[in-house]
Image (cartoon, rainbow, N blue to C red):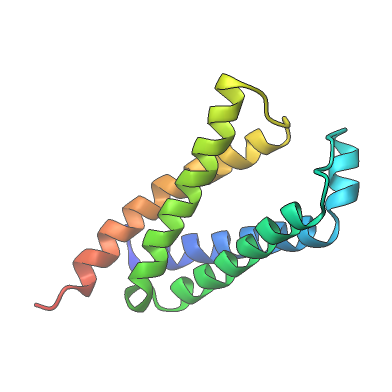
Length: 129
């Protein structure tokens, strides 16, 4: 992995997470209705998670600008992507989950692999000689 690739991965994730955060934060009702999914009993459950997603997207934008200065955000991103995958796949295998979440978990799995590779690369280049 190169520094250019790390920056591209985090810029792609920044755009992806910011857009999803905005869509789910502002337009959750049409999304849930389109996929015939029951809304939770309070909009805040969706909107809070959407805002966290937006905030992570902004963090990934910081990483894209200067990966070595934001190694901690890379590590938090790894944990965030892993958490979403575990929750979605856990509910898929041991219960139920709205089907429209599964493709997002698959995309996050790809980002997870790239984030782990990026963390390893950035950690190596950030170490003082």
